Structures are given as C-alpha cells and as structure tokens.
Amino acid sequence: MDSPRLYLSLIPESLVFSMLPPEDFGKYLAIGPRRLSKGQAVFFEVDPSFKSDYFKLEAVRERCVRHADGSVRRSSYVSVYRVLENVPLTALGDLYLTTRTGDTLRLTSRPFEGDGKDQLFLYQEFCPVNPRVASSLDPAAFGRHVTDPGQPVYLPRLVFADLKLHALAVDPVNADSSSLPYPEILHLRECLVSLRQRPEKRTKIVNRDLRQEILFAMIRSGIFVAEQDGLLFYPLPDEDDLRRDHFSWWQSASTASRL
Image (cartoon, rainbow, N blue to C red; front, side):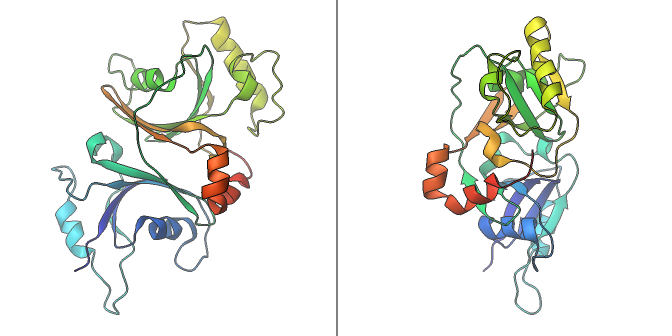
C-alpha cells in the first residue's frame, strides 16, 4: 500500500502530500515532470504522524493516491498560507536543498554551538518573509530577536540561513569584498558599518526581496528554524566534504549566478 509523504516547502510556502521520495520530489519542484522549468527548492520532510486541527490533513491524504494509469501522484496541496507557523519544530524532519538542475542535498539537524567571535552576520530569511538582513547578533540571538513578541514587529517562527561575509564580518570598513558575489555590495558594506557605529541597532535590512537564484554555496554554517523558545540548526557540510561526497550537487550549487 502506498503511503504518501508530507513536505513543507519554503519556495513558495506550502504544505504538500506527495508519493515521491525526497530526491524525486525535489527534482519535481525544480525542473518539473518534463524538464520544462528550472528553479530551486528548499523543503522539509514532516513527521508522517503529525496531526493538526488547523490543516485538513486526512482529507488531502486520502486524495493522494495513484492516478488511474497507475502513476504516482506527485503533489496534493494541503495549504499555501501560514504553513510554517502551524507546523511545530518537533514535526520537522530532514531539510532538503535542491538546485535548479534537480540535484538534492539532505541536511539533518543538530544542536547549534556558536563560536563566540565578535563579528557581524548576514542572514537570508526564507519563510514566512524573505529580506536579507545584516546583524550584530549571532544566529541563535537573531532568531530570538526576530521572534520576540515584545518587539513591535515579530514573527512566530522564521527559517533563515547565515551567509558568508569573509573579512567584512570583522572589518566592514577596510576589508576586501571582491570575492563576495552580492550585487548590493556597497550598500551591504554601509549597513555593516552602521551596525558597528550604532551598537544599539541590532539589525539592518540590506535587501527586501529574496533573489530567485539562491547561491547555496554562500551559506556560511547552515539553515536555522527559530521560534522564541526553540531553535533547529541544519548544518551545511564544509566545502571539502561537499566536493568529495556530493560533487554533483556542489557543482550545480556553485554555478548559480547570484544570490
């Protein structure tokens, strides 16, 4: 008997049943059934025992069956609105990053341990909002800050990645930025300098819109799912491990034109 899987996709935000395993589901999202489209995908596998009063899970699960010709059903949508905030951290399983060529990398969560260095950070938020943000806060503190209900504006839950800044992280005034591919590099530098000059200011928006092409290769440590009282961390393997164990994915991820 076929048992559909449940996925939480971030681009765009949606909750989907599918009869495809993760690698095939990522390829389906990225290039379509006939390879007529190309786009990246970021999605979680959700615990199949997850139950909810908010989503109509069972009604959709019953519809996620094989087609009349025997082929598997690729997607049966449960919801496309306020999905992340209604799926608890405890229900989130492995995270998958799929490149525009359909190569998928699986990430597994583990506890986050910051390095404690005095440096600046650059974050790409994925869901439910998607600006790029400079900050003096490390990932754990940034997650708590953005989800703090005491703030005038806050989010109940957020998925974000920390991005590489290289030497700009410690010297935004003088450091060479030529190796960074960000198109708004001068504005980014100004934002980082502002954070150094005004320590009471903890965050600064660099860009309000997520680029359609995510340069996965610029992820510094990994991807985070934050809420006020919890944090999931999905570390990205280092470059040597990616080249050795996931060469096809790394090669595809490294050729993305821009972040």
